[in-house]
Amino acid sequence: MTDLASLRNRQIRLAARPVGLPGPQCWSFTEEAVSPPEDGGVLVQTLALSLDPAMRGWMNEGKSYIPPVAIGEVMRAGGVGRVLASRHPGFAAGDLVSGGLGVQQYCAVPAEQMRRTGLARIDTRLGTLTQWLNVLGMPGMTAYFGLLDVGEPRPGDTVVVSGAAGAVGQTVGQLARIKGCRVVGIAGGRAKCDWVVNELGFDACIDYKAGDVRGGLKAHCPKGVDVYFDNVGGDILDDVLTRINRGARIVICGAISQYNATSAVQGPKNYLSLLVNRARMQGMVVFDYADRYPQAVAELAGYLKDGRMKSREDVVEGLEQFPEALLRLFSGANFGKLVLKIAD
Ligand code: NAP
Image (cartoon, rainbow, N blue to C red):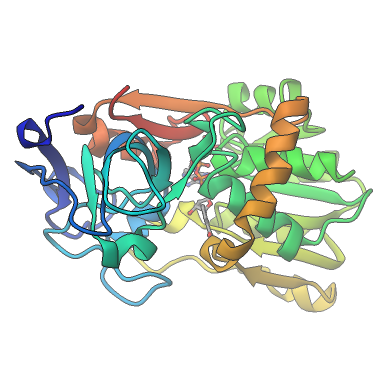
């Protein structure tokens, strides 16, 4: 039995809204006592946190698909943890769970916040803890519904995915291969490109940091592009727009190249290609598919088990590493799903 009264909860809170890349001035470190759960509540120990590009958006003021993190609030983060104490009928001490735990060592979830926190038990027979933050977690759900519901790939289609070696990209590409498509990734650097081709079975991958994305698309998509899963926006979106086929589907999943922009966001210059090609471009937000996550988890876990799906996680250790680790997403230093390990 853990002596709850002796526990201290270290937390990282949003101290200031960033301009450009979020520097150390954006964060404050706090520590407080841990209290046992009240009726209907649960106390969770954080084991690992998902570091996501979306965090950058949550730090901004203004209207979005989710309210911003308030100044002084514990930074929002999805994570996996272990239930330490429960007064909720659905959870018992020792259960492994996922949910919106925040950048802190312990998350006390009162009864009225249970739904908002999205606490759910996870089954480590289906995937490891870190895979529950990757293929079986939010990025995997994004890949699954973004590709299948919005991208509507058909066998024989050419699917292009940017951020190919990242969390969402790795699952998009492998899933598109499983569905019978030709898959071309776009990623930064030779090592990432080699990995998605040699380990994940992509048909090709274009190293955008080496330049000439258009040339690469021409060489590797000789029949044009039917589905583009866009994780990065900016110039790469414009390059792909020049190669799309009639009736192409462009999934606007993210635009990481724009998240730290200090001037106006760069929109697509080549959007008239949509008109000429009777194509569509559609945004998606993963949370809209929450009711169907179990379906996606079951299918993706099946691919992990039969070896058709692989995953790669990039694990950084220690709560205090959060500010530095987050920046890795924007430099491309992460190789695979970026995870912050908090405890064993
Ligand atoms: P990730 O791909 O694991 O990590 C981010 C990667 O973005 C970096 O490793 C880097 O890879 C690439 N990158 C950074 N700056 C770039 C730039 N200027 N141009 C091109 N690439 C750049 O992250 P993730 O969690 O899978 O997220 C990928 C995208 O999906 C993000 O845009 C995110 O916001 C979005 N997303 C959307 C939803 C939704 O519901 N719509 C849900 C989850 C994620 P390289 O080394 O290849 O440059």
